Image (cartoon, rainbow, N blue to C red):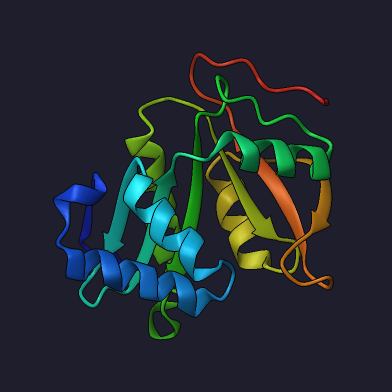
Length: 170
């Protein structure tokens, strides 16, 4: 099932639509509220799927401190030149899951990156997201590291750009 996608700079969307995006990210339970609000405003692009919406994703502009922190934890350097954007906040509502919507969201974010490299993070126990990212050309790099909860392990995945060099072990 193909859903209509709407994407663009955060300013393209009404404050209400951006608030809906933030609410859905919170439903996913992976990120703190203050971080999400800031990251949504500073994102390169937001992606909405369907009415409601049924799913979301973001092309984020990660802070250097965040990049350094997760690079060190994973033992893989996420070079800003090779991977300028982070694909994140991919979330599909419960009713819309299992219909390929995450693939549409990821593909749109890749299109918006315009050939530039991307990185993403996913929980190691989230087999569906790992599969979606790998089908979209992302490769696992480094070692899994501890997430917000000690029991959660996070994996870095990268998708090289058309003209970028891949980052290396630190």
